[in-house]
Image (cartoon, rainbow, N blue to C red; front, top):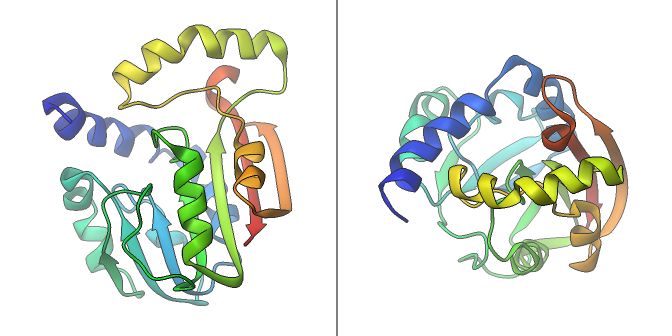
Length: 204
């Protein structure tokens, strides 16, 4: 990672993903989290205010040191203990069956080998554990998809590897999860190639 990815992208993500429009989606994604939670792509801690009372501890996986520094105030003010214990979602430093729940919000678009990361998440979840997620990804309409494919190379360069066109639901099920809840929709607040959202829960 270079200067731009280390020092600029985390600030862009903090601003772009910290808008008021994102909060209801974070609430929905976090609903039902319980016990010990591993959060993939913790970023600047924007989910912290949305953790339900049923969460007892959060283990944050975040590669960007700046992202973790931007999260300091939210972490300090959290009623839930939060520890940073992992830098790479593709290789989680945890034993099998370590967590009750997992959380991913606008993260699967960026992880280079997202299939491997999802298999790792499934590995560290206890039997019956659940992955909660909200992500942007491949749109349902071919016209929008064409724009996503055209813009992917630009988006990857300016947004730290992010892509628009990943088929999130298929990636989750291909990793061995069973989808129990899924809502696919266009969110408000941006063009369709950005706001094709997947929000759901999948069981390990």
